[in-house]
Length: 394
Ligand SMILES: C[S@@+](CC[C@H](N)C(=O)[O-])C[C@H]1O[C@@H](n2cnc3c(N)ncnc32)[C@H](O)[C@@H]1O
Figure (cartoon, rainbow, N blue to C red):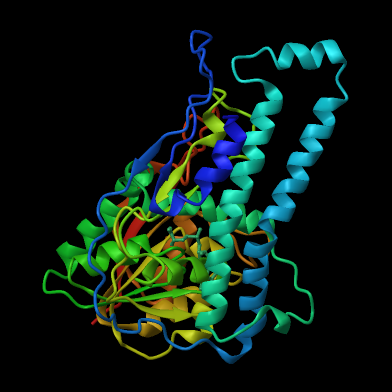
């Protein structure tokens, strides 16, 4: 049976197992170039009868953002297909003899294009389910997208990489590099437990790890593309057991690849079911996270450099912390172009002191790490992240 037809037939089975798909002919000694394999996921764990609602209701202005995020997920197949079509068209402008050479590879070039096209379809099905689920959760429908918001495809591609970093074994090394120092600092400072705020929590893995240590965690996030994915992962009806889902995040970008199969690497997730005890606060950290002196700790991971006004973040964290509460930070100070002040690490620490924090200068160190590094990618980005902890005086 031709491989492509097999892919289509198997796509329906993906939800129940991992479609590993290929031996993509990286070795010329492989005559059967394309051997799809289904690796069954373990038996589904029993679904808990009910889980407590863990999301605060959305801010009233959020509907447009939710519709826009859903549209981003919905639009993925169209946008990905468009890019693949362009690649195919480009390839087809080669001379016949050059096309024949490319098709003489162990995995013929046109077949690679066909595989990518089928995997776009498989990705699209899952991303569409995330959109469906998110819209239903917020009681919205696509018809309400009257302004025809366009979803941002860069964000969708990023989300697929972030899923790998947060919720797969592939991301374990990157997680350990940054989570371990944070958890160590937290458990040393607050051995008795306490209430922790994680602003800009993304897909929630650091919040999950802190919750698993017994802390009461409030996670805040304002990007609804992330929130819809987190909702989907937390709902036992959509994610009944670990490794329930598979995506192929890298099928569009074929540059910097080690092997023919590299762009087709599957990402199966979540490796564990996200903690149900986290209380999620959707919306802007500056406006939606409220209260004074309510948290024992604030943990900022790859977050403070998202600020437009770093002083606002500093003062907000100071305000919501209890006297004696700690702020643990780890991140690269990759200030956005919209930032009004872009301090160096040394300046950020001085500013924290000027706002009132007691900075533990001895805790300040550099931790090298990647973020959502692609497997077999021929480029590696390394962040020299800055770790520190500070305290609101008693
Ligand atoms: C680089 S990501 C880091 C995600 C997560 N902390 C981690 O390291 O896995 C920064 C996150 O902060 C979120 N964010 C940025 N500004 C925010 C704000 N004002 N309020 C809440 N979340 C925000 C972004 O949407 C994004 O998910």
